[in-house]
Image (cartoon, rainbow, N blue to C red; front, side, top):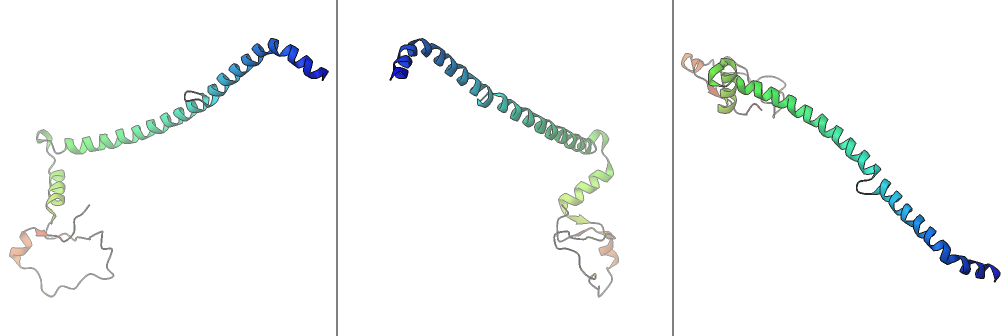
Amino acid sequence: MALMKEIRRRLPYAAGQVLGCLVVAYFAYHLVEGDRGLLAMRYLKQEIVQTRTMLQGLEAERGALEARVALLRPSGLDPDMLDERARLMLNLAAPGEIVIPLNQGFMASPPARSEPMAATQASAPRRIPARLN
């Protein structure tokens, strides 16, 4: 009983100190675990590094695309690039070219031709069955 009386007598004096410790503990917890705490800062730094790496990759890809677009501009038109894009967009092949459709896989042996192409057919481009993407 004497212990309980002593605690009740000292409690009003210790209440301020206990309250102060609780406030410090509250702010310490949010310093580490809060929305803007140390762990959140570490996570955001990792995310920034990943985003910068992705940005560098996208800038490299954009540079490559800009170089290809520059070859198609009227001021410096590259005939090979124009030919490549026209064949891809129109789905055409030249008479002497061999077309391998990638979406059907490779065949064990090429199909046999029963008759050679006529001279008029050899000069005109012919349609190919699958797109080359």
